[in-house]
Image 1: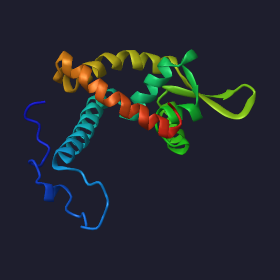
Image 2: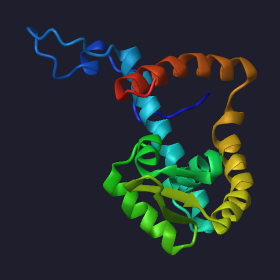
Image 3: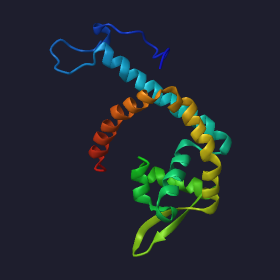
Image 4: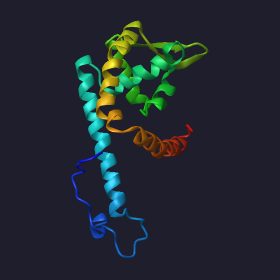
Length: 177
């Protein structure tokens, strides 16, 4: 990723931890570590922003698209709302509001769970499936243009090897390893 602007030049060690008191045992980030951390934050935010912008012509937000993907990959294109909330890292309340908006757009339906009067499924409608099929090619092109194609083959493998253990660690903290 040549020429990446992280809004900061290489900070000195003193600049890397400006609030570090002399007696504190906090393991402050080194200049190198801080440079990586800030680059990660910037790439994550900019990529999320750009992909979201490119979903707008389809009248979808990033969360909408993620829900469509998760439901499209689920058995019978449906999932319990609690499991969908977990899969999409949303609170049950936030997901409920999101599903209400998507129901109004005809993309999903709520269905009762047999044998569980309090449980609900989110079910991808035929219109939701058609939307997914229409939007997915554009979204994949965007992911390629703004992320995947920025790496050569060795870099792709290295990025996966670097990120997969972090994802595994964070899933384990959530109880989803």
